[in-house]
Length: 459
Image (tube, rainbow, N blue to C red):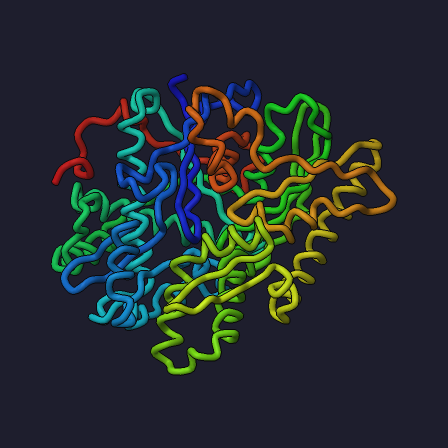
């Protein structure tokens, strides 16, 4: 297995990557799937998940978990890490958005445009991927690695233009990665003086970068339908991440599996939107927190604990948060009554019903069952599970599949993959997908075993 496919999912909250042998779709073996350990040795984070974060400090720029930790330490100074920048790539005027100055809460020095900070993060991401490939006993010996990335179907009919712009950003990131060397992976980050001198040169001298593009929901549908003996001929996938909610459908036609493009839908409301709904509800219920400083402090506490808050509400239907000796309660029923959430739920239902109608119509021609699955960080949300499990009359029957396939529990993964599989599903599915499911064709890079010492490996 000297030729591999590696897929990057630079998500809104976390970035992930996975690799699979070339041709894995036709001859699937779970042991061949290689989730990339991007998280590094930090015991506070999952080894497979890399925090998508950049923090501009007094004299350095920090990345990943270090960026979040520093932002939390300076929260009282209204300093924040740049996160959710992936959604910037969805705007209609991408060049204008990239050339916008970063907010002062992110960059108090007024040094960087949004483009600069995204390029810096992508350089950090490329460095972590190189480190993970080099540490992998199999991938480090690969002769060739085909690269692709996963993205939402943001703009129908304009995916090529968006892809070209993202490839320019990756090319600039690769140039800075080569110049920065080991600095990018240093816990203390990269000195501002080095960045202000080296980043403009890297951007000016950047070379072309080539990766394939696969839509996120298509990648999710791929992993769900592979290696399943009782797989139906038609599959619908709902993928709620932090920044977008994507829906897609696949159909098996003889030996081929194809996407039904008419079923593809992307909503720009997802996990981050639900976080804001919850935080605003708690703020509104906290009658004692009326001063701006009190509200800012409570908002910061809620955001730091949001993962635990949602887990409690989604699992038990209710949770209680204690803050400064006061109890703040929230229930799933409260969330469902919120006007903003209700509008989101209606939009989600309409989008899902549209996609389901397309796939059921296609399945009816062969009198086939339709399988439904939810993936992404929001897969366990009760409103998502209720949506795909909802009974409907007429047409082919819809059967719900678990978000984590049986093969993710294979002993080769040592029990580490299954707990986070819904978050890794996009990267894994993107690595497994055949070229026929790509939105653009794939590009190649030398495998780690084929590289000699390069500038990117030197300090």
